[in-house]
Image (tube, rainbow, N blue to C red; front, top):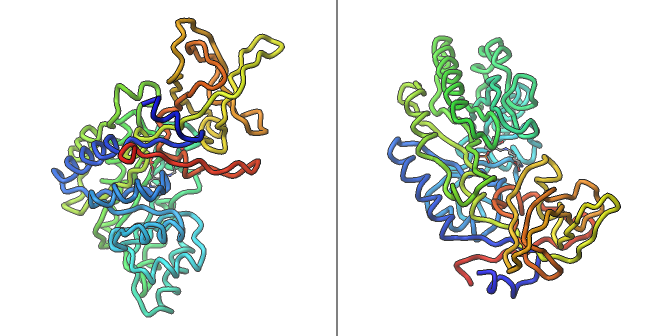
Length: 380
Ligand code: LLP
C-alpha cells in the first residue's frame, strides 16, 4: 500500500472504503435488530465520496448548520431524514430548514422556539421540532468535547423547560415531535449511556405526566473509538451500545434515534504526510518535521488529542524517539511527543491514523496552506 500511496502529493487523506462499508454494515445491521434510526453526524466528514457510500446504507443525517443541511440534500439525502441542532441558528438557516421540510429542528433555547414558531407561521407551516434537553451528565470524556453538563451552552435546562411548558404548548406553528439529548463525544466508558437512559426515562415519564405528547427520543451520538490501538478495534462496538440502550431505555415504544459521527468514519481515514526535515533542539529533542500540520488535522493542537502515527516506508532496524511537528507557525502544532519510530528521515511517509472524523472537516487554510486532497481505496 505504501508504494501506491507514494505516488500522490502529500499531505492527503486516505480513505479505506471497504472498512467504511464494514463499519456501516455493522451499525445498520444491529440498529435494524432493535428498530433504531441512525442519522450520520455530517460534521464529522463532508467528503462527497464518503457521503455517497453512507447514503447507500439508508442513514438519515444530523446537521449543525444551514450549509450542512444543504450539503446533505445536495448529496442526495432525503430531507425527511435530516435533523438539525445548534445553539445559534441564524434566521436564514431556520427559514431554509423549514422550507426544505426536514424531519426535525432540534431546539436549544426557549427564544429559538419562538423564532422558529414565527418563521414557520410566515411560511404557513407547522414545523416539527425536538426539544434538546440538557441532561446534566458527565460523559467522562475530554473536557473540550463534553456537551451534557448543566453549565454547558448546549440544550435547554430541564427546569426552564418544565417552567415554560404551557407557553411551549401554546405555540401554534411548532409541533413538539420529540426530545433530543447529546452528552458529548468520544465516549469510551459505555456505562455513561446507562446514566443517559436513566435520565431519559425520568424525563419522558415526567413530560408525559405533564401532558406533553411527543414521539421520537433522539439520544445523540458520542460513541468513541480506539485511537490508541486502531488495529485492535477497526469497527466500533455498536452492538454493545445498542444493547445497553435496549436494556435500559424505557420510552414506551417511541422511535429511538442516534446521531453517530466519529464512530462511523474515524477509523477509515488516515492522514498521509511526508517527512521534510530532521533537527535536534538545544535540549536534545529530536524533531521530525512533516509536511502536514494543524491545518490538515487540528485535533492534537486543539484538544491535546492522541493519534497513532507510523512510519510506513522506513525499513531501518534502528529505533529513535521523536517529536513529530507540523509546518504551521504555531507552537502547539505538534502531532506527538516522545514517539518511538524506526529511524525516520527526509522523504519517509508517515500515517496519522484514525483521522476520518473531524480531520478534513476541521481543516483550515491558515498560513494559506492548500486544503489536502483525498485518495480512496476503491479508486486506486
Ligand atoms: N449530535 C450532536 C448534537 C453533536 O453535537 C455531535 C457532535 C454529534 C451528534 C456527533 O458526535 P460523535 O458521534 O461524532 O461523537 N471536533 C471534536 C468533536 C466535536 C463533536 C461535536 N458534536 C473532535 O474532533 O473530537
